[in-house]
Image (cartoon, rainbow, N blue to C red; front, side, top):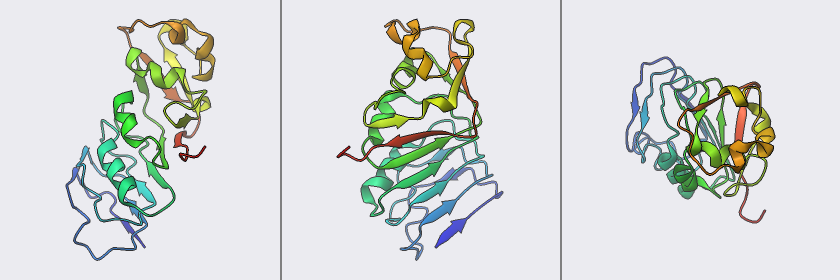
Length: 191
């Protein structure tokens, strides 16, 4: 069973939005092409069979890590795919990412560029490896600025001073997807 709410000018997904609905077997929610800017941490509580969440083409400024973490800790499905492409997400901080490590969650980002500086070094420089139990498909993101990194993809930055430096950069480095999709995947705990 799935639910689709498209082009409805929806701005926010509140706590317990789907909780009282008789949808115990709901497997997919499609909220594409709305104006969603925020998702409450408990927005998807009670959806224990959810395996696909599509929130593409909205106004999210951040990955809703707390809501995703609660879904994964309460669901019985083996994997959850979350589509967040073409939102206003500009960075992915390590401290937030730790909330979903080892939860069998795939987050798909595409379209809008990510801006990275020293705060994003953890993701850029660990893209080739398993960082915090996460495999990031680095081929999909490429730097478009600053001038010394233009044209580099994440994998090639391992030999660049960006990854060997410990200082934070004050000017952001812009990355944009050169392929259809940039995909992050969390490995199962026994990998």
